[in-house]
Amino acid sequence: MTTEKPTVAIIPGDPSGIGPELVAKLLQDDSVLEAANILLIGDGHVWQQGAAQAEVPLALTALSEADIDGFAGLGWLPMETIAPEEVRLAEVTREGGQSSLRTLDKALDLSLAGKVDGVLFGPFNKAALTEAGMDAEDEHRYMARYLGFGGYHGELNVLDDLMTTRVTSHIGLKDVAANITRAGVEQAITLAEETLQRAGISRPRIAVAALNPHAGDNGKFGREEIEVIAPAVEGMRARQKDVTGPWPSDTVFLKAMRGEVDAVVTMYHDQGQIAIKLMGFERGVTVAGGLPVPVATPAHGTAFDIAGQNKANPGATRQAFDLLARMAATHRAARATA
Image (tube, rainbow, N blue to C red; front, side, top):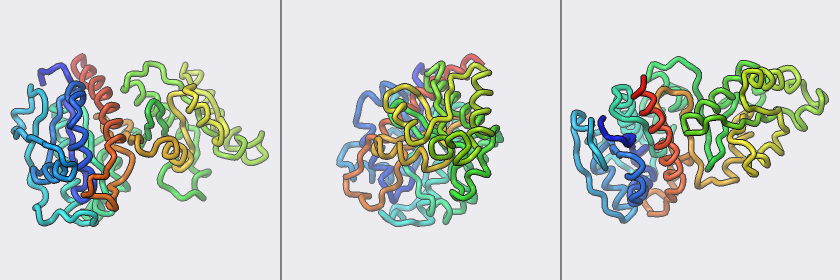
């Protein structure tokens, strides 16, 4: 690649959902192409389906993989992943899952080859991915395995200028306490810090949430804060990280809303997700933190209830693109100096 701007690969997500419509709406803003070169990947009929749903024009300029180096503006890498008659709106289908995985694989291949600097994907449907044969717990673990990445990684959620990550994720609530470890807390703090740095914040301010009510109330309601979380925070502070806590989880997001921190590390899935979605569901972004290539997506799902009705709000997709473009620019610059 010879252009100065980063190149972002965009895939539609599940063709039965709102992803193609969202991308079509995203591309109507000229400032998108001012921030990055865009490479659409996938079936032409899926992209045109999205444009028709959004009632907007979309001109596709086909490129070969050899053409990607040095192209500028908006390009399209054609693939044949699903027949037009197999796209069934608002339905979970194996064909939709297969299309999602094939376009994702291609985007990841291009990132490994250094042809793109980041990947933005429309919403996936996990049931469709499973029907298509994805045997990983989620798409984040699938991507890590596909990329051959064995380091620490995890899902981060972003709302405007606030990022959240978590120590435990997709496990039962009854198992959370046993899975809160000092190493886990430290890794979650590091993941938040490094991801924010990739987004351009040199010294992120991070608050760590407690597990128990009132942060354990000096051990009255549990000792995880005393024995695990606080020592992890102090250990990270000793390494010159700007991190505080553990803060009671019913007040830590007030600090976030006041702009006092850049990230909140939570102990379990819904501790952060409920707060973030209440604060701005239609602007939320999910980042695949820790992977060797920047990857982001809107935090909402495929919204089958409104698929094909021109009702999809592109706000979260725009937020995901803006964040990814910044991360992709940092990633591109780091590769150039490596």
